[in-house]
Image (cartoon, rainbow over all chains, first blue to last red; front, side, top):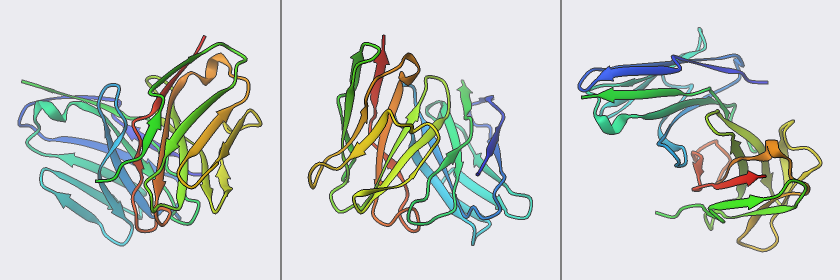
Length: 113
Length: 115
């Protein structure tokens, strides 16, 4: 089955700096890679996703890149703000009627003033 | 925007008791899922459900677990005889077309505490 590794486990940046979180996956058949943000005590919320037919996707301050050859994908947050502080999870799956997401272990991002 | 709703938000039960966690998926969705998250850990897939039957289940989803869609709106997860290690946050989710074209959105979760 799929295995997703995520690094770093914790990340502290100053407000305004950029943050990068990296994930690797094992199953070359995986073709859908969402990122979720989870604030303390709340549900994971989808913030951006990418499918294997594109290499990069951007939404305002958030971007995701995908390297299918290396089986890497990364989340980039620019101009970080205190409200970006949360745990971020990457996930991967091969889409299909019964597709299940395999999550990474999470990155706790702390944006300091 | 429609959301997946889950009840209760918090359930406390004694070891060995049965619990039923309830979910109301988004109304036109056809695929339903349960995930769980042990405190401080990653989100883990439990089971997917489509066309009134289980599509796939993980090794976590053993004989103590069952799912049901008892009517046209609810989707339930039953744990027959709870264990301490079942303590976790349980998230329900639904999609209209699997994950081919529709992303997965979670409900607010039920925090299950087994004492």
